[in-house]
Length: 260
Length: 320
Image (cartoon, rainbow over all chains, first blue to last red; front, side, top):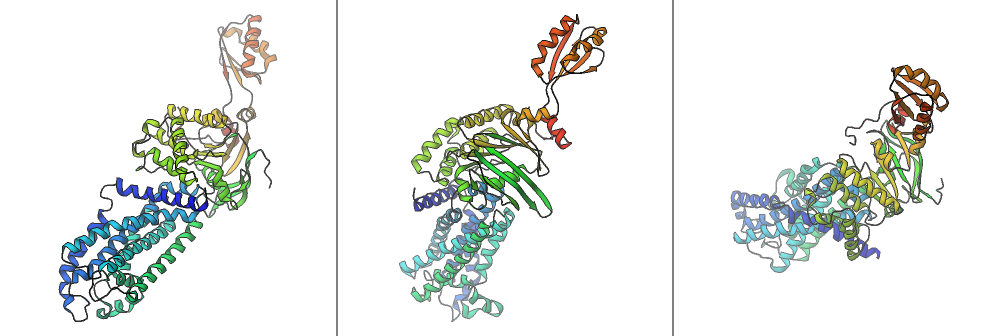
């Protein structure tokens, strides 16, 4: 078997294993859907009139907050992959993988692929909920694609962040910290209002938070004032690549040091 | 350090420290190809730490180890290709079925899908789990999980198999089944490194035994060699008439060291063991001494353990 075929076989096998959990743990993905939908409804209800402000790029606050909820769901789905790795480490399953000859990066590839797949469900359900509530896809197909790229990419980043913490702590106790990280990344950004309307320390911090640009990428789908364009796309892609690279490298480094 | 062609495992000066605690403290051992090596010691003696080093899960803080001729630190990937590992806790995904787990293990070891399926079926037959193959692991008993764990360790036909306390917590029947399987594997030529806290298990399975205590190997040899270190077997001769005891002791002096036990008992310590029974009975018959019973007491690894460590090999869950 060639190296590429072997890598593909290992990645696919670990991906399949991670996906079995979705099929066999009924309701396992529900928290990644329900919490963001509650957030969506609650926030849209409370802050609906914010979109009346002159600098707001859409007349629908629901359209503004919907991509955020999609990212939130995708992020939680990705973070859960990290929490599952912590469980595997604690329960000894990961030792089985480590005693196999599979190259170490492949041991992370399977869960990353699983995170990408898992993210599709909450993203689609939350998006559908938003459309049912009256949000329009102002960005057409390009915007929709941008939203999915942002969600799946954010799930990968969250999975790598989660796996980094899992490899560092080697304990399931790290689970809440993983999700808190996702939560903070999302909310310390332009989550509620555009950058021009932010005040105080958050106005200073949000431009430095890469998630701000990932949100910009996603909002091309539903926010009329953020038109689908390369100028609105590349910063989000760069942010995803940067965060993915950072947490991917840290996770790999921790994995290499795992047996020390 | 050089490994002979026949050596499956060579360990020299192996140590692993956690802060100030030396879990493994200068272990030297050699396991020949095709041998079952029993690594015996109580909880916390350093058995599992040694196995984790030999299976590349943990790096040593000193010393070196070769497995199938490959250095566990510098050639870890090569080591992983030739070893099979069943660790202390059979870590199996409870959501997966036995068949799925075997196929996953096959993929991890580079078997093509068809080959992995074929090998998985053969192993399911071998460990008698074909009927349960499509059940989730959550429904398996402890014995079934251990058997599946063993099957998973064999998917890629490893040269060296590491079994870390494979029967801990199993009932006697499951334990006997697993022992039979280990013997069969060894008959097929697989080298087995078996850690256990059960003296009986080491005695039943191992060609050679290393006793580890507080991170150091304190005795090593075949079970018979080790038992010989604590003395020859003792024959307990019970007489019918206490008045014959003196005469019996005198007559039996030629067969070994004599001690008296109670009014009617004479103990004869003889290197011949069971082979001394017939001559002893004959001698007593010729001396006109009537014998009630003769019992042979051979030293056990328990005695060896006690002699070399100064404490008993305590196991919370000793085999029945």
